[in-house]
Length: 68
Image (cartoon, rainbow, N blue to C red):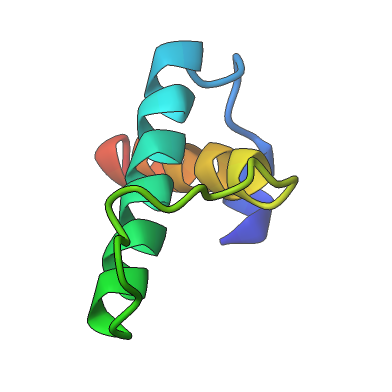
């Protein structure tokens, strides 16, 4: 799968990657809620270096699957 994902050209649309980053943040927030963190809706989730590359990869995988 990595070989196919690396061949996706051109780069995925920025708006798609940003939407996926937003989903990852919401998923992290939902995880906090599930773990019983008080005020999880208001919790600050720091922007980390993990979400953008993970979002980019998810979008690329989606593009590969759609074009399969």
